[in-house]
Amino acid sequence: MTQQTLLGAFYYGYTVMQIPGGILAVKLGGKCIITFVIISMSLISALSPWAASVHVGLLITLRILDGVIKSMMIPAVFTLLSKWANVGERSVMVSIVFAGKAFGGVIASYTTGLICSSYKIGGWPMSFYIYSMFGAVLAILWITFVSESPAEQDEYISNTPNKNKSRAIPLYDIFTSKPVWAIAVARFSTTFAFNFFLIEVPTFFSNMFGVNVNKIGLLTSLPSFIAAVTGLLSAAVADYIIQQKYLSILKTRHLFLVLGVVLSVVGFIPLVVTGYNVLAVEILYIVFFAASGFNSASVLPNAMDITDEYAGFVAAATQTFASCTGIIIPIVTGLLIKEQNSLERWTVLFSLTGGINLLGMVYFIMFSEAEQQVWSEQKNNEDERIGLINK
Image 1 (cartoon, rainbow, N blue to C red):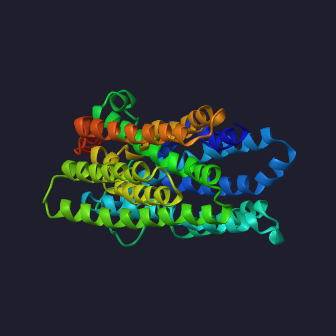
Image 2 (tube, one colour):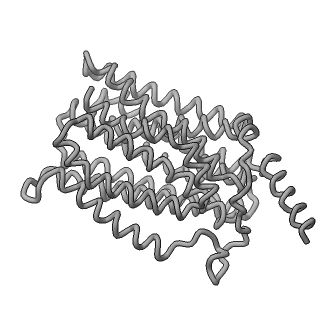
């Protein structure tokens, strides 16, 4: 239970600050927020081994603070993308960003396993120090080379206008919007599945099959790489379909969500047929993460489909529901396997994950949209009228 508390602590902070982070991203801009996140997380990483040596409560506190700060990243990213991406570029730009996240996961999962098992260089604490140093380098590169919008650079690569950061966010309209709730439910269901495989399946490998930490590092890095590749490919195909008008934006989003969810559920079949063995779970693991890459062409860009102006805030609000899964999953897993760490209990967890994924897909198909919403366009029209009056 202490392990599950540590794993879930990050998400307590991550959930609380999503919406405030979205407001800050709209008001201050994406570059400023991401700069703060990178520097702060690097400091927390460097302090984590010391916190662990003092008291587990201090480490849990740092993990919560880590989540609070990291929660600002997604809204800041979407705030930037809404300024840089045209309609036919959204899937690809989102997939490139999240591919970077996946490739980072590939490197971190594999190298951390090696570092933790190598006591010659200091063991697990060294992983925190190494990543904090990389964070410091990244902060310098980010500050030097990234611009908030095309208007801040000499060459315009997008015709998306620069946004006025002083606008009031239409909170009531956003929180009563069916398309926003469709994104929220789909993000919850897909993230529930993603976090279950990310957080708990490595524990399953270790507890049920005795897989050592080096192999777990390899197992958890390979699927992330596959997810990044499928994300890039599916996003390119999705944008091509939209640009060529083979399907509408909405139908394209539905198509790739269905493909991702159905393929991930199909991945459960080897478990049923073989009765759980290492190979069957590895197949499921790889198939699931490959299928999760389709989210880059389905749910993730949809916030920008329904609003350019408040894409960062909508992403933050919907991510709040998604991040709750990081709290729920360790608790549910801990309760189910606390008294009986058996294949039967893990079967319940796998079945629950697949069912939630399917329900989220159905809800998204029923209520999602891919057009700029009235509450977003009204603000743009008001600003245009004010501009004419001032002239």
